[in-house]
Amino acid sequence: MPQTIFPVTLEDAFMASPGVKHFVFKSQENPAFDYLPGQFITIHFEHGDKVIRRSYSIANDPQQNNRIELAAGYVEGGPGTELLFHLKPKETIHISGPYGRLILKEPEPARYILVATSTGITPYRSMITSLKKRLDANPKLRVVIIEGVQKREDILYKEEFLALAAYSSQVLFRAQLSREASDQLQPYEHKGYVQTAFKELALNSQEDCVYLCGNPGMIDESFAYLTEQGFTTQQIIREKYISK
Image (cartoon, rainbow, N blue to C red; front, side, top):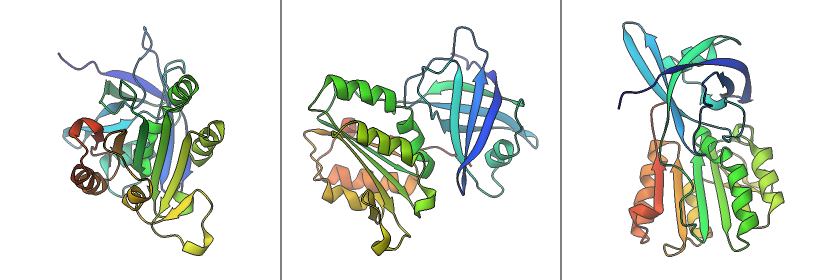
């Protein structure tokens, strides 16, 4: 089936951290653009004499009136970076989608482990509303969200994930900081890479479903560790793509 490529217009953009920009687009599609929390879109644009495609996870839940939000990290010389970071309000880009299988698995596991580095956290932001509904309906469900960045200033959507943890005692949010001093950590902050958290969380291959999104090296290393611990490929949902 051929891709349907359609325009979206930039409504707003702001820096979500020193190196990451958050974008809010509006689609005029009718019926409204529909997707599942955790999916991504692909941007199509010309760069030199080539048509370039770059994929970005959708950062907002689907109930938002044809809005499509995403986050992009700044990569010097990256064609996706050049396009998005120089885009002005009311300007238009073209996208296709939605794509991807990084969605909340059915039937529910005993515990969702949502692991990300940097902008890989955006699909989990889009899941917040759905997670609240699941938590309300299932008092035994547990959710762990692990966000790996270098420093505290790099944590994306911290307030929203802390609010989710405050909403339900069934939720744990932990930021893994690779370059922050150990004696200055907040209660939800931990020293080390996201993989450091696995042993502390006592992962259970019989009950947990692990999601991996972000740095390809993190995903490959985590996948290897998890399979060694007895996790099957059906229990590990992963997604990586070029976004620079």
